[in-house]
Length: 284
Ligand SMILES: [Zn+2]
Image (cartoon, rainbow, N blue to C red; front, top):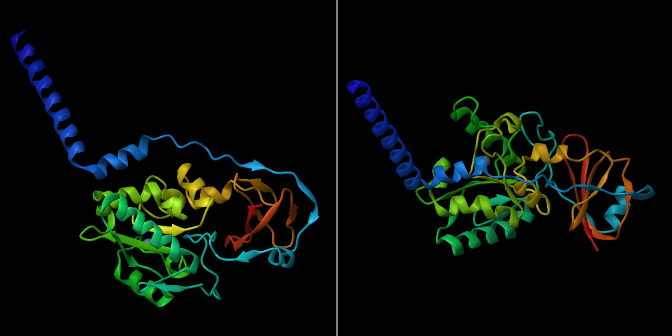
C-alpha cells in the first residue's frame, strides 16, 4: 500500500516536472510557439465565386489591347513542372540581387515594413539563379534538398531566400522579423511557398526563408487560406471566371478564353506552366 502511494507521488512529480519543462521551453522558444500556433490555427476556405460570362470569347490580342500585360507570376514550378527549355526570365537588379521587375518595389516595401515593426532587417541570400548556378547548388547539397535544374523558382527570378544577420535557414524563425514575415508578406504579394506540413504537395520541406512572388490578390488568398500554389491553382476550374472581390481571375486554354462579364480595366496574364493561362483582371 505504502509503495503504491510513493509510486503515485513519484509519477505526479515527474508529470509536473515534464509539464514545467515543456512550458518553460515553449516560453523560451518563440520559433516553436510560432510553428505550433500555425499548426493549430484555423484557415478559412477562400471565397471563389464563379461568374456568369458574356457570350463569345476574347483573344489574347484583345486582352493585350485592353491593358492586360504578360508576366510569369503564376507559373507553377515544382518537381512535376519544369521551366520551359526556352524560358527567358524577366529580371531587374536591385541592391545586387536579380529578380522579376514587379518584385523589386514589393520586396523593398516588405523589408522596410519588417524593419519598422521589428527593428530587424532582412537580407537576400539567394536571388535569381542561372541553370548553371542551380546545377552547382544541386551538386553541393545532400540528395532531396535542392531542386533539380529547371525545377527551381530561383531560375525564374520569382523567388528570394532571405535571412536576418546571424539567423539563416530555419533559425530565421528565432527572429521577430522572420516570424512577422510570414504574417505580412502577402500584403506585398509574396507567399511562403513551402509551408510546414505540405511537403507531400510541394515536394519541398518547410522553408520559412523562401519567398515566392505571385502578386495580389493571389498572395493574400493563398496565405489567408493556408494553401500552397499547387492547391490554389486547383481551385480554378478550367474555362471559368471567378470573382475574387477586387479582381476577376481564371485559368483558360489559350484559344478558349470566354469574354469576362463585369467591368474591368487592365490586368495581367501568365502561363501557369501546366498548359493553361492564368488571367487576372482588375475590376474597374
Ligand atoms: Zn529558395
